[in-house]
Image 1 (cartoon, rainbow, N blue to C red):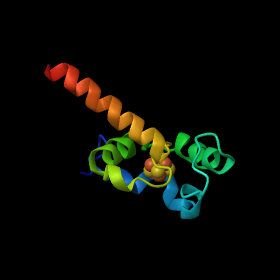
Image 2 (cartoon, protein in one colour):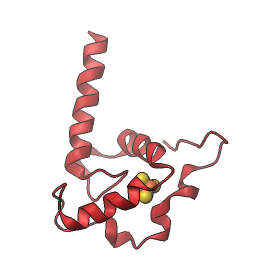
Image 3 (cartoon, rainbow, N blue to C red):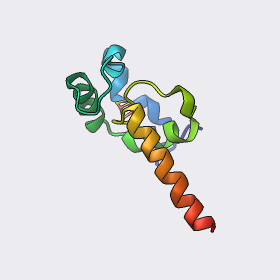
Image 4 (cartoon, protein in one colour):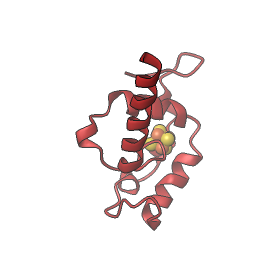
Length: 94
Ligand code: SF4
């Protein structure tokens, strides 16, 4: 799934990470407070399309293959968000 910006553009055209060394987003130490992770999170924090990025990654990422920092979240954080979303959806459906 690719969301668009309110003006209908592909959000990826405004992704700040397109201008950053991709290695920044794939640190070896993926603890949420690891220095390299904090660098990646700072990049995402200043990205104007972070919400669209998060929506797309959460909708399309294979939970068994999460890696790297995306939308300002580590794989572990995305797993937690995924689980929380599923729990809330289950509560709504019940
Ligand atoms: S939020 Fe981060 S990973 Fe997503 S597009 Fe922006 S810079 Fe890239």
